[in-house]
Image (cartoon, rainbow, N blue to C red; front, side, top):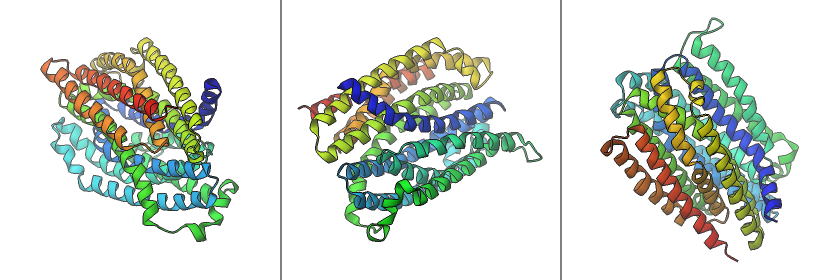
Length: 440
């Protein structure tokens, strides 16, 4: 039974995973094409991504509430309620996106006061402005993607994410390097390419949801169900706010670590960004599994099927363990080859290879903690997991990483040792919580 349910979860997860990997590939492609100019441009892009990562993932956490509530309503076979959650969730995500983008634009000059290399900080400012604007179409795309995913139509967003890759590459080629008579904008060109790509992806998905026959039944009841209700907004916030805090605290620990590493040297910052890009790429598979497991558990939760909740959860956790083991082996074997995809500086390559060894160690805990958090969201248990995540990253991982980096003079490797501790603590807490909550 566990094997059969694992197969169903993987089948649902595959399009989500491909879509997530496509989104991550866009970041890696950006990093590789920017790194081709020089390592200071790469460090500047890393600084912006680290600085805006916390508010961005908080926004993504808010979009997760859409899939959770839509999936639960779908489990109840209530199409009108599905439509109602779509409208209220989308409006909530619009407001969230505008607030986040506005705050980032207003506070962009903070990049000059983070103790970074002066040239790197000044290169980052215009890139920060464009990336802040691009958050709006990206979060709106994510909101509609979560709606489709919640109904288990996961291929639509996947197809658009894949289509965004060649578009982004061509725009990067034109705008970063100045081909076909266009100005050579370098890092700023990458920012424009991202903004244009994300906008076109959102517009395409918007028209698919509005016009495609698959979603027609939910559009047909819009006159009755597309009304803002505070009760519904509260339900969405009950899932969205803790989800945002959970993801934000994890991403925040990595982002703050990146900024701290940037105070060591631009070389350390560039190496950190390379290793983190690789680790983030493998993590997208775990996120896809977590979302698929969460959707299936939420659907069973709507049907009040406790046995299926337990079976789906355990089978997904076992899948995550095997996947994490595979990633650990790949990072260990190819730790000296992967950095060459991003940069040619000898010092950067050497340090990035070392950091990938640390990344290999935390692959299992990184995968299982993501699944644990997703499964708990599926049964609407979000408050205690948020506390657990806060303790794991901000009480254990980040302070210990700082101590290893500066007290024990381990440098960037010390911060990565902190990652290992934080992710392991989070994994143990969250898996233990799910097994306790679903005990039959």
